[in-house]
Image (tube, rainbow, N blue to C red; front, side, top):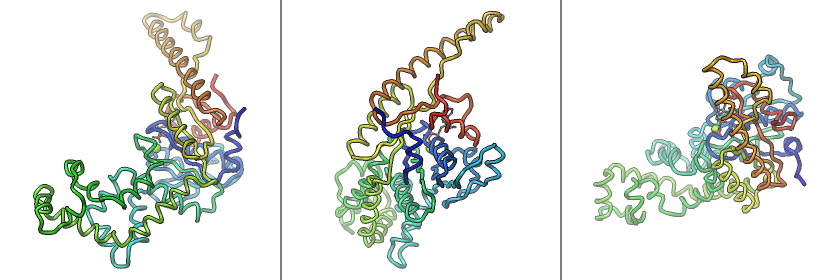
Length: 372
Ligand SMILES: Nc1ncnc2c1ncn2[C@@H]1O[C@H](COP(=O)(O)OP(=O)(O)O)[C@@H](O)[C@H]1O
Ligand SMILES: [Mg+2]
C-alpha cells in the first residue's frame, strides 16, 4: 500500500521542506516541485539557498534578493511552459536574514553595536546550525506573510542533513550554555573554561585568555554577550516557534536521496530520524539514477571501427553496471521507506539549470515519466 502520491502532496501541502545530504539535488528539485505545483494550479513559492547561478537566472533571480519575486510569464512562455497559478522564487540571503532578526529582536539602540561585533559576525555565519536556523526562521515569516498556497523550502548545503532538524535546539543550547566556547578558538572551545571564568575581568583567566586570543577580542566578546543578554528571552521564544514549525501539521518533508550505497544508507537513516521525531514524510526522491542503456546499443556498436568500438563497449558495460547498482538502491530505498511515495529521477546528460530541464525533472516527480 502506498501513501498519497507526490501529486496529491503538491495539491494540499502548505509547506514542503526539501532535505538531504549536500549535493544530492535539493535546490534543483525544490524548484522543480514549485514549478509543477504552479502548473497544477497552486500558487507556489520556492525559497532557494545558494542556487547555482544559472538556475537562479532561469528563475528570473538576477540579483541577490531576500524577497519573493514572480517568475515572469513571458520567461516561462519562451520555454513553452504555461502555469495555472503564479510561481514565485527567492534566494535566501542568510546574512541579511540574521541582520533583520537582530534588528527585530535587539533592544533599541543595541542593534548597530551587535551587527558591528565580530562575534556576531562569526555567530551568524560559522556557528554550526546557524544557517539552518535562519532558514527556518525565514520560513516562519514566509508562512505568515506569503500569499503562496505552497511554500517549498530548500535547505542549506550542509554536509549533515540532520543539522537542519537540530538547528533550533542548537540555538537554544547556545543561548543556555557558554556561548563563548563556541566562538573562541578551537583550543579554548575544547577546554573547560566557563563563560563566567572567561568574563572575570582582571582575573588570571581573562588575562591568560586575553594573551592567547588577544585582549581586544575578549573585550569584544564581553560586549557581544552583554548586548545579546537582553534578547535571550525573545530569541528563545523564536527558536521554540521555529521548532514548532517543523512539527506543524502543515509542514511536510521531501527527502532527496542519491543512489550510491553511501547516499542510500544516509537517506535511510535520515528517513528514520524524521519518523522518530514525528515529522511528516511526504516523499522520497532518488535523484541522478542511471538509466539502463537501450538494448539496441550492442548491435549499433557492431559496425564501428576500433578502437572506438572497444571504448564504447567498455562505456556501455559501465553504464549497465551502474544502472544495476542504482536499480538495487531504488528497490532498497522503496522497501525501507514504504508507504511513503518514492520516485526516481534519472541522471540527465547535462546539469539542470533551465526551466525546460526543471520541467522534465518534474515529469518524473509526478509520475508522467518513469525510469526504464
Ligand atoms: N538528475 C540530475 N541530473 C543531472 N544533474 C543534476 C540532477 N539533479 C541535480 N543535478 C545537478 O547537480 C548539481 C547539484 O544540485 P543541487 O540541486 O544544487 O544540489 P543540492 O542543493 O542538494 O546541493 C547542480 O549542478 C544540478 O544542476
Ligand atoms: Mg543546494
